[in-house]
Image (cartoon, rainbow, N blue to C red; front, top):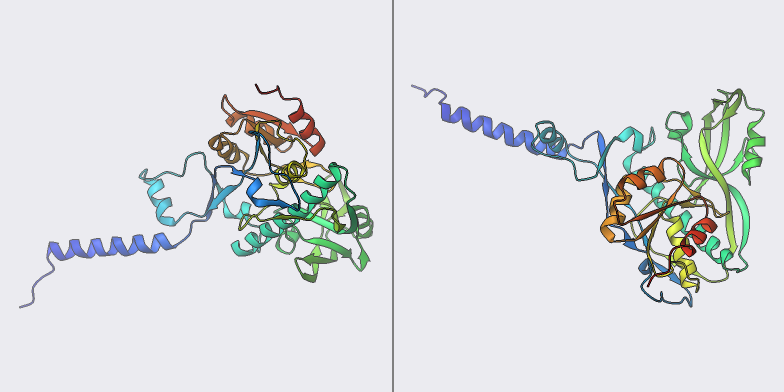
Length: 345
């Protein structure tokens, strides 16, 4: 006579099923990303300026990054049940907002690394020009800073790509790109020749209409003039490891200036974030809430932030009582603001 299924066997079966389910859910990634604070890092160890001077006094520069983590489905389940929570001061965003349509997480990371490499080159050139050195730049195209997520170009163009031609016409400047797009009707296609790292490729893109002028065709990007640095008087190298993105541009620029002998910090512990353009303009960045908490964790006294895209507001709201927030739109404005700080005793 066969033994029946006992309650013990049922219990064991349920436990085994739960364990298997938990293992599976732990391996499956969530459809969201967590933007998590990371303590601000000193810039000086990453930047080497040939013949540069070590930082004097108590002043120090910090750059800020964030951690982008994709939690597991198991974490999401426990969070839904009230048994777990996301890290303190983190923000949860859908993957579709962070990663352009048609791209993979790996492609997104590679694009961020290209942005970082580009920002480092620009930082060296802007810093040396600011201290009076003769930097020689040769226009080489249109640098893509950002792509709107809801346009066809989002799946074909990446940040830090350089557009060198449109429909066979060279586009060494933004103005040249605008002229090349002028004959194209909204919804029509344009063939862009782009440089992506060491690769050159042609991509066919369907345009969209300009919200302010429905007869004008746009690709759907934010961009700036790009240039090849033909002559940098003092060699500069920056090793940021596996950290990507363009938001450390201002911090790198200030550190290069500091090592070239400029008094940038005036004795303060200064954190800085913001993209840097060849003309010295400081542009907005993402993750400002988390970056402000990272700056607080590092014990900085001053935080230079871009004025635009709610960056100043988010930093001010999360600064606490001991962190001075200074909004800037350019390198020169940042330098003037630091020079105007009260003298330390």
